[in-house]
Image (tube, rainbow, N blue to C red; front, side, top):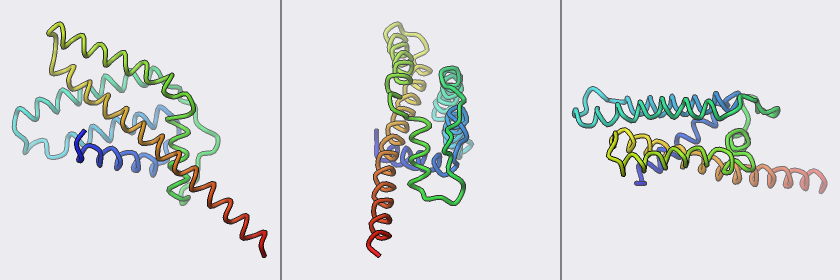
Length: 173
C-alpha cells in the first residue's frame, strides 16, 4: 500500500472510533459507508476509466457489506463509552468491538476465502476488474481492522498507565 492509503486507513480507523458505533454490524456498515463516500468524492471530475474503476469498487463494497453483515453478530458491548470520553477510551472500545481476542480466527478466514475466489477469477479469466476491485477493498478492510487492533492495544496501555499514575498520586498524598 502506498503512503496515501496508509494515511487513509489511519484516518478511517480514528473516525470510526470517534463515532462510537453501537454494535459490530453498525460499525461495519459505518466503515462501508465511509469508504463509499470517500470513493464518490469528486467523481464527476474524474476521467471515465477512473469512474469505471470506482464503480467496480463501489459494487465490491456493497457485496462485501453483505458478506460481513451475514458473518457478524449485532451484539453491543456493555461498556460503550459515553460521548466526551478520551480518544483512547473510544479506540479501546472500537478494538474490543471489531477486533476482540480471536478475531483473526473468526473473520479473516471468510475474507481470505473471498480473496482466494478473486485469485481463481484471475486464473480463469472471469470479471478480472471486478475481482481486482473486491480484492483491493478486502485488503483495505483487513488493514483497517489491523490498525484498529493496534490502536486498541496502545489505547489500553495508555488507559492502564493513566489509571496506575492516578492511583499512585492519590496514595502518595
